[in-house]
Image 1: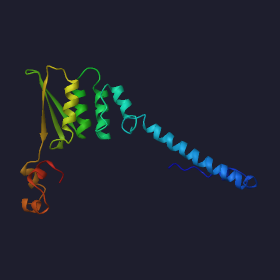
Image 2 (image 1 turned 120 degrees about the vertical axis):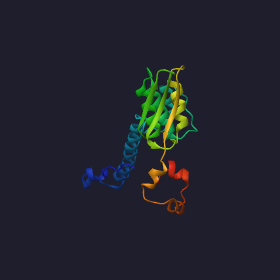
Image 3 (image 1 turned 120 degrees about the horizontal axis):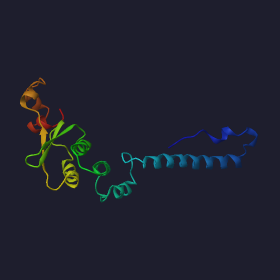
Image 4 (image 1 turned 30 degrees about the vertical axis):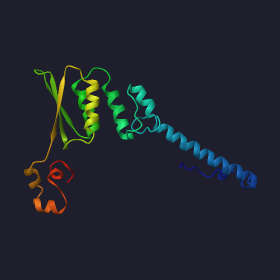
Length: 184
């Protein structure tokens, strides 16, 4: 809660009787609530911090709002759709993939077979929200283009360079999938 300086401190002591103190206490509560509401309302002006205005932002972006989807996914959907408005370029596809994967991506165009590949460069394994990435790319890409994804995985050589044996990893409860694409 936002806290302002005590309103009584603005008044000379001679004016402060029980009635005035009670009025000032009530005013203090209302002013602090007003400041709280202003701070919360300001957050709604930005998609990255919006909560209750996400249905409005979805409408503005031209997508359906799904109240069953978590807030972060809703925000990402709205941002991706806004970024994707206009002509779809390699940069647009790249920004969409990066906004959902929280990592760097490359988009490789294959002009001969009318396709492109989205390569995840800094994300190890399949990003958690790959279905959302597919959904947005399907909405913005030209219909005649096909696409595919390339994911980065750790090799056994990468894991050996860390300096632990498989037995040590196994005692920590790590499986091969954890080592290949999980957080170490």
